[in-house]
Length: 474
Image (cartoon, rainbow, N blue to C red; front, side, top):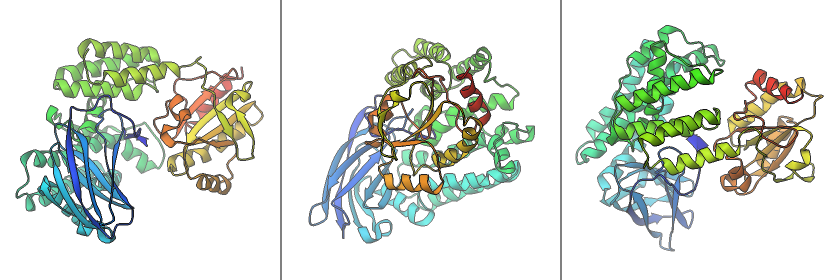
């Protein structure tokens, strides 16, 4: 589902681009299911993938026309059974696909308007893998010292540009620009991550102590803004952190525990974005920054930042998303009542969350397929041991449809607490009521059934979590 790196789901997109259409038809030989699915995300500040389905007839033929944002290229995916193929679509494409389901990647071929681009992407998948595999290669270089890291990522990018150069004939220039930018800006994005991630990998534990020599990498990262690249996902990632890390590399920082100094730092970043970035890139950067921080900072700071944004871009396409996100944050603010819901626990009980009033509740949304969720649930054992004799309830709400898998994990790891699940996945009422946009998500609820914190610490921040829980028992 939802991440920034990341994750929300099949909903309409209030800040999508102007709409056009794309048509994909063709034939699947030896089909393994009766449909195909096309999916893509046209929302810049959140992950709301759109999905369109076509029925495959008895002879293997299908046809699908769907709305598609006007503008530049967008990554998309076509799925049949367990087979997936990558696409880079642009409004107006009219493609005819042929493939054998038994050997999907090696037999897929396109004709029609847009065929040259799609056949290039299919060839790239066979030779070098899917585009997003590039990020895994760059992550593996994070353990290297700065000079070796820079050398490694330059070589990885050169490998991609060499592939493009060998297969460039007939490709339209806008696609070549997209393809080149995709890899360049992923390098810049991981350069932003390097100073801290290198230390975490090196010491095998979380740290925010960064030696000055790590910022050598940041000094090599350019300020390269271009409004025409707003459909390139790596450019959007680059925008989200480029100014923050440049300021930190120059010796500036902010203080999490001092709201005024924190806001002053962010205000400096916003003003710098407004002055240095082109208009559309600046609007995106600030909208994404506000949207992403709503749940992790005080609502008074968010409102000040939002008012700043509205003065500069009163008719922004991002306004509906920001209004919705801020309204959600206000609804989940400390002192507001936690939405009630029914629970069916593993031991056969049926009760409501409100039945637990009188106890402090540490509420977790999770799923068995979320490795981070499971890892953090194991870390909760320390917290439980230190506060074992307090009126505290750990409630786990799974959004996983595979309840058997969840139960197996709970049993195997001997996890303790109150476990329940909801139906509907990311569209479940409970998920929407709590504004869950990533997994895991945590909420601390006081004995009166009200939210206790705007930003509840995860189990990995056990010291802070225990202190916040202890406050509620005083």
